[in-house]
Length: 215
Image (cartoon, rainbow, N blue to C red; front, top):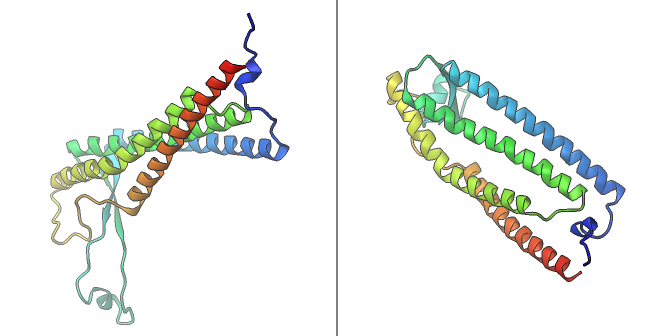
């Protein structure tokens, strides 16, 4: 009975020197970014443990003549967001908010680790595999779900925190509520692209197995 040679699992043809260098650079960058973001997540965990976090809100519209009141030479002005760093607030929203943000941070770290693995498979001329297909699929589902549900959860957590702080929203320079930003829309588009890539890798993996069965 003929045995299957390990080389048949690799794509035929070798890599050029420039392609190897590019993949090595990509692997190095992916690993560094993954570790850096993971470290940032660890810092976020310590901040959450010390009951400290940063909140981000869309800026409220300023009253007529606000900018001219600062200086008559200012014709107009605007700012899109307000960042607040708060500490010592006792609210269940603090845990929900920190957990949601940290989930997104660690997910980005895992994605760059997956990108490192993908480049490694390409370097070995073995681009197709169950783990690669699953990686693209899970990434697509997470990106779409997080972009749709993440802002809703963050908004609910922020409202709980602000209620505990007893802030007068009528005079606050920011607003609250569900905000679907341009970055969320872009993330959904990227997630859909990854879903298509997952489908392409699934088909490629299946064709590779069929081809190996004919050899």
